[in-house]
Image 1: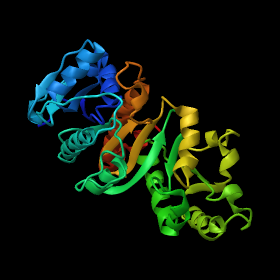
Image 2 (image 1 turned 45 degrees about the horizontal axis):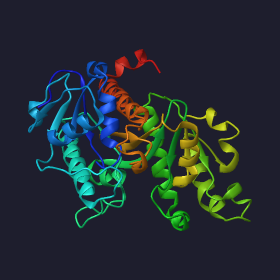
Image 3 (image 1 turned 180 degrees about the horizontal axis):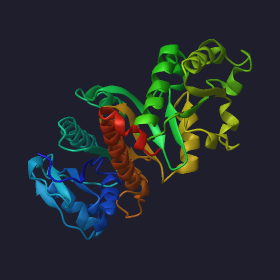
Image 4 (image 1 turned 120 degrees about the vertical axis):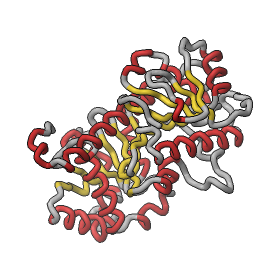
Length: 348
């Protein structure tokens, strides 16, 4: 049972041999955060105690076995397991993958059951999470199955938002995945997300080409002419402010991205390399298009610095605050849609 009015943020702990535990506790060590939201870490009291002592963090927490026992304004640790865990920072270990999924699954269930408002996920290792029961490339695909809606990886920072037509797909298969139906679905998801979650009434969206120089009139691939341009033309005819395709190589360096509310990239590295170059440490990975809010930092487990106290918590902190803001925006928009007389009072 949820208590009081502040937002309840569930946190899946991620790979315990990585930097996840460190950035979670570094973020929560500042007591002022507890005036804004109530955190629930899905791990175990024993595990969090070990991390607290290892990094010499000055914080206290409330251990719970039922979410109905959470205490508002405190750091709550939900016992997702009771076993003693041997943490060896920097090592890839299947046991850590098993525990990170156990944390994720229980946090997701709490999200589905409205026992938490927002889910923020610490980094996992995409290799050691694989098992007979869990065969997803990562968080996004798992949450797409568990939650309603059409999931989309949406990378967000203060002045840049990048969505992907394809995410964890081998480069050689990208063009085969990009169809008119996929383009329509992804761009409509981004458009609706910008309106509902970011309060942008008439979003302007730029789309990057699939091939170098958007195919050079078919010399370097025909997909931009045969698939992408016709799909974008139809979206424009339906009233959406969608522009492109733009040549990806010069789009970010020229600063053109600043003229749009979101950029759509054809594949993972086309969008994430420029995003992380411009926004690393400040960016957030938002799983847009779903019935619930999930965010995560823009980095991985960083085994090379795990356990050394060197991890920067900025992106994780941004993930929490963006998740809270999106939750509030979505809640406000829902209320406004139920009471249309208030729409004219809304500030965009």
